[in-house]
Length: 259
Image (cartoon, rainbow, N blue to C red):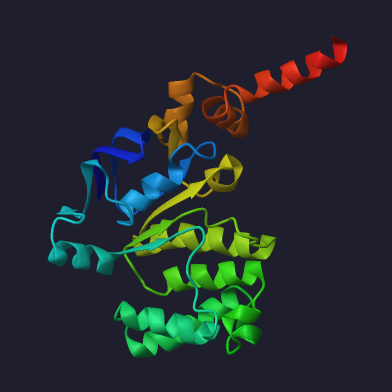
């Protein structure tokens, strides 16, 4: 269980998150969606322990983040946070990076070697496995970063915009299926962000919609449909919740042609 209690996060005087309280059940796929600049990454960074909120707190499996060195270390054994633009050791090879990350998370050596190769094959990186990461394209660097999160076998995967960063259609397809099966078959808890609802609606069993630092909708797709009172297709419903002003702006734009 991930729990946020009255979390408020400021950058300077501007509140980016405002009194956010959430419970994220285990073994679920939760997508945090909403317009850019509205608090999605900040919310995930607070859950991931990168940011410490000015007010409120985060608990993972009943352990409060940053409450003690022991609690924080235990949380970090259970949860991995992958930012949108993650640090990569550019002079190391992809294989070295994956093996080093797995050892940091104390993955069994025999499983680690096999798992690293399967991840390299999954994301079509086998031919680059022993080349320095600096020689990888932007999309390939995104794939090796995602592989570094998956190789940890962590119970909680916190992924900031995993489908961005030049990930190609093959990589998107592979990642969607992997996340679905990890939650369903291996009881992993996955929380990810995306500004594009279409990308995550088919893999998430729960959606959290953030606007202006507040949670404006939270629930399964059916629950959001009932909350919004919208009976149309899924994408239109999500657009109504997330971008209510966009179609109005489009209409106003074309009204200028008739002025």
